[in-house]
Amino acid sequence: MSRRVIYVVRSWPRLSQTFVLNEVLALERRGLDLAIFSLVRSDETVVQPQVEDVRAPLTVLTRSRRKLRGRLRAHRSVLAAAPHEYAETLRFALRHPGLAAGYTSSTTLQCFDHAVTVASHVLRMREEGAAPDHLHAHFAHDPALVGLLAARLTGLPFSFTGHARDLLQIPPAALAARAAAATALVTCCQANAEHIEAAVPAAARPPVLVVHHGVDLTRFRPAAAHPGQLPTILSVGRLVEKKGYDDLLHALALVRATSPAFRCHVYGDGPLLQRLLDLRDQLGLRDHVVMHGACSNDRVLAALASAAVFALAPRHTEDGDRDGIPNVLVEAMACAVPVVTTAAGGIPELVRHEENGLVMPSGDVPALAAGMRRLLGNPWLQRRLGTAGRATVARDYDVGDAARMLESVFLGSVGPERPRNASSAMAVAP
Image (cartoon, rainbow, N blue to C red; front, side, top):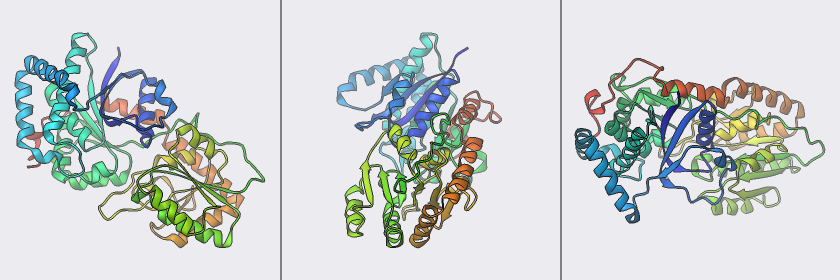
């Protein structure tokens, strides 16, 4: 019997969210039948080639005037099929505008509008004999609120995954309301789980599962050595404040002062690109650091094959933003590339200092430089940490294992049955 799951995401496909794509593909390999609902269409010009392998149909929920007629049809169909649920859910949204407070781009009523469109598709699927069994949202802000409202409209069990800013920058009451409606709350690291347990009262908290972002170990695997090449440092990430690329550049300037024979390749795009290019040039690193911009996962894989060191310098920002466990660290370790990074967010859960990588205090530029310099000058240490990193990922970060855990969430086998009505479980955000 086919198991069908509705997936609600913020944007699809998103280059920086390869972990969602990996998860979808792994679930489909396990036989799940998914349908993806994206709040907005990604306008990125670079797309992961693996997107073509996804079987799930995509529905974009953009609230445009061009789609007004279709949205009105959706409201009529849901109102006709479930008048009580429609009225109660609308009343709930009107009474609790604070559910969309904090890090968000939609109001509660706009999320209700999206949820109605999702619910209308669920009705159609039921009429066609292909009723979904579960609804799951990725990210705790707008997508989880849409998921909560769609679950109230349809009666589907609901769960969601919280990651980083989406989880940390919405009010505790808004997070608690989403949690109270869920059968399970998934997150990618123990640091996030501790935040959830501190923010959400126990009475409103469903089972909290730490499910690591997995990688496909058949794609990300060690490459043959490349002796004689100029040592290469690789870094991959969005060019935003929490990734700490200014710290990395300052550290590279210190490395250049004593170990000039290296080249650093940075892959990624973001709002800080020009500022970082200017800093690179001011530090005299133009001949040592190449910033390539956005790229596909295949290109990252090719770059990992020739990297001696993978470096990433995340930090906590003043507004509380931070990483969970960056997927690029998992990918590098899967390829047995030794990593030097910082103790921000959930990173110490993956990288253990001197055991499977080097972990420096966040913001400590001299320590970061010393770690890179040490790895560049010690091939034996590169091999030891790279081998241990691969073993860590193979044991704890296999995407197939992550998919099995998520399937248990969707089948309702992760904990005791709980009430799914947020308003009956706790006081929600005003």
